Length: 144
Image (cartoon, rainbow, N blue to C red; front, side, top):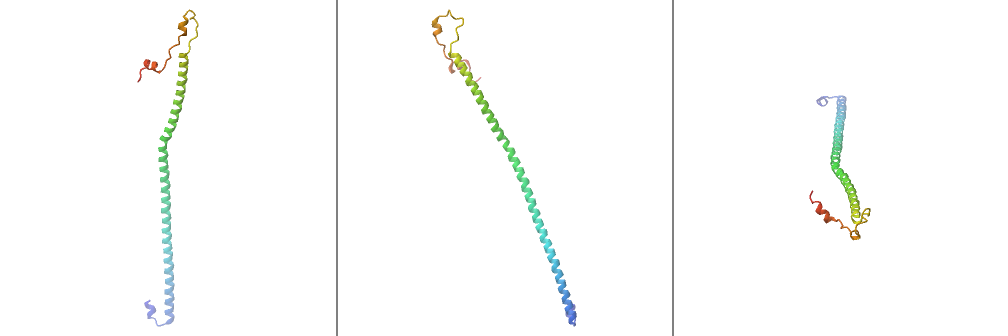
């Protein structure tokens, strides 16, 4: 710059100004290149940060899903166990109902007369006393 102002020749002044303009263009290109590289680096770091956050969220979601799925196992076990208990209680109830029906029929019907031909007709005509819940409660103590 100082040389441009101290020269007396116009051609030299124009040459210095032209070289100064070329130097300015080079600086602008380098600056733009560095700025674009810096911007690209920022974009890349931003993209990598977003990718890292996505990966973290994905793994966190999988872990939470596994934990919640493992928490469902007792619920599923309770449902299956409850249904098996209900089926078993139903089967036992039907078997008990059929057993008590057979018992009631046996208690309320007369046995066939095979060797009791000499028994009095009044004894045969007398019905047997029904066995109900009260008579069973006396023979089976509660709480055992």
